Length: 326
Image (tube, rainbow, N blue to C red; front, side):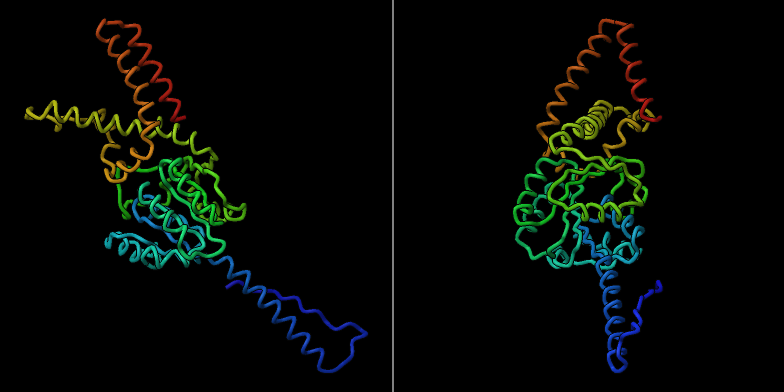
């Protein structure tokens, strides 16, 4: 425990002797003590994380490292996930969503997008602390921010969020403190205060992310290009190849680095990705149209044997891809 230094004023030369001296000293001491205890108390935080999969369990680990004194309450229907995190002391308690959120100073919604929206609607009519901050990690932001207006209208602080990091692995055992290291963490401003944002970023400091503010519409367009469409392409490639080689005795057993690297993300949780694709369908379909046009153009160059166009297309992609690793 840190030592506390209390300043107690001495009596001035014009003070009268008697009982006023010890009473004043006691009063000043108790006042200083209560102020010190109150300061410590407001630093104590109760964090509720709903959804203890890869992202939610990683955030729990990150926040626990940032401030071991905080209490983290986990909410998840999966008994094994919750028990694992309790055993590892990543979370302190497991409660139902309804029982947990009234205790929270910060609520992190880390389930699928459809679940996040459902929980936002529930929070709008639930008893919460006056200064609670609600935030999410959903992969699409327009639909979530639209739903969050219910909270904002009820004077409940909301901050949209999305860490641009993940893995084809899933579940609480796959979570780790360095999952987001060096990644962009998008923030979509809602009704949070400066102090609430600062406290959230303090608790997320061990993640070593690049904080980036963005509008919800811009976010959804960008992630459709960088995340959602690549997932659709990887999924389609796996299913197309599997269908083509199903009667071949060797088939997918011959798949090597190129195929595996290109399609790694197709191994991700289909429940989560169904929710993501449906929540950002408009932007995804726009980008797929652009992709199909590029693919058709590349196919035409191959059909007519246009060596120069094929080379230039490959060279351009090589240059762009190599720049990502610098």
